[in-house]
Image 1 (cartoon, rainbow, N blue to C red):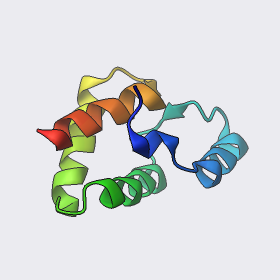
Image 2 (image 1 turned 45 degrees about the vertical axis):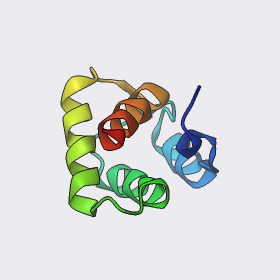
Image 3 (image 1 turned 60 degrees about the vertical axis):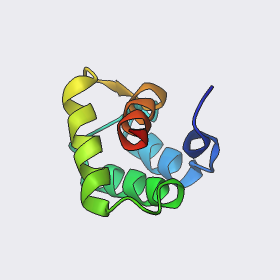
Image 4 (image 1 turned 120 degrees about the horizontal axis):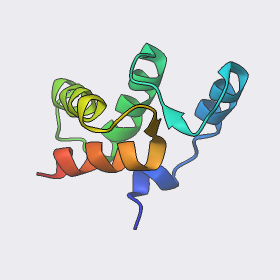
Length: 83
């Protein structure tokens, strides 16, 4: 079952990604995408420091092969933050 963060409204992200190309993959190299995901995750993990969230994202960027399918990528980050 997908984490609640994936059930949120991603329309801003999707619209911006569509203008740039494919919206189904998460690009670790795009700062705005990382910042967007950090903001989403802060709502679900309010006790986690931003540095810990960014560290989990960075680790998943290395773990999940590029291109990074959004659902699989977010699942990786959530699992790291849940431990």
